[in-house]
Length: 518
Image (cartoon, rainbow, N blue to C red; front, side, top):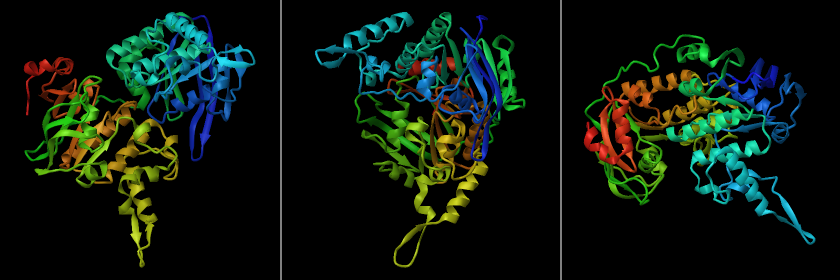
């Protein structure tokens, strides 16, 4: 650990929003050349604290110091100019432009040719190349951002942060959409940065990563500081108990449901209209069953489920719901036939940020919340809207100041619960969950797991796409594994091992070894 000094200090930071105190006198010290993990349940105040550190929020009370000097950030650009950069969980590159333009956006170099100033593309290329060589990043500066995988987009964001002369880089859930090999690449870059004296603030819910990469760990709960410890003194169990304020001995709830013989969903020889996507997929989903869907990045799991839900075209194959052929041409057709889909990217394809919690909960079931008067006039049934919204706020323990609060101001876990409430309100027979616990804390995960087992016990059927091996094995009755657009095997959830799942996920030929458990 580098003990050469404190680069960022936040003293007794407080921040309130209408109806909620997000931060209550929270202090944080980050040392130069270290990885400082910031942990806590969703709603603990981590993001609010970091937005204060990055100039997106202005604290109501407290002081921020960089290298011992007090600073008052006007905005994010001011924070970057003074040495603090932030890489958000949801990356938003300008996909229509190339890599070097993304790095130098707003700061492109110019050259004067006569009376005219032109963009100096040669200098921009050379500066980008030098930056990449320093960080050992293997990306062509002229490549289009739209062609890059998520891991490489993240490398570009890191390089952009370094280009500002960052002393502190905040990384919010940086591995939430990365495969294991991509995580290893990210960790290599992080170690390179810390060796140069740059401090990393690392926000994550993945315990193994925290213990592997961090020097120090700060834990928050309910807007307050719990404490800060050397990572070497912590275990996963200690972190969890300090995050939630109670012991959590069981990661998954007990299974109190038994899958039935009745087939709720039958997919036969389904092939995507996209020749690069899934081919010839067949499987069954039973009443009261939780069917896990595993596979590596690029296995086409999301594409398969979105096709079943009517979001992507199908070239051939058949879908049956409760034994009857289902013609699903769009999402509305799927909803009417009792199918619901919780998408992977909650910010991009789930929530509508500027709308209220109430509007987001009721979005998929608007017609049930209207009333018609004489003359054919239709009005919103405000009483029923309030009652139904409140019932899901209560039953899902959604932390929100009010029903009218904008959903973008809620934590990630609470946004996810709102989206779950949206689909539960449609009373689906089949609920498809795409990475339902991605980027949320252990407490919120357990609540979602409990909800899944409760639905299965009530005779509903659940498909859960997950990239987390313990989650697949801990929650699934059966585990269906895909590889490169093909179904490579179906395993019994009670006996499946991570080795078997990885074998099936790594090679389509693994199906012959892993077997099919229908």
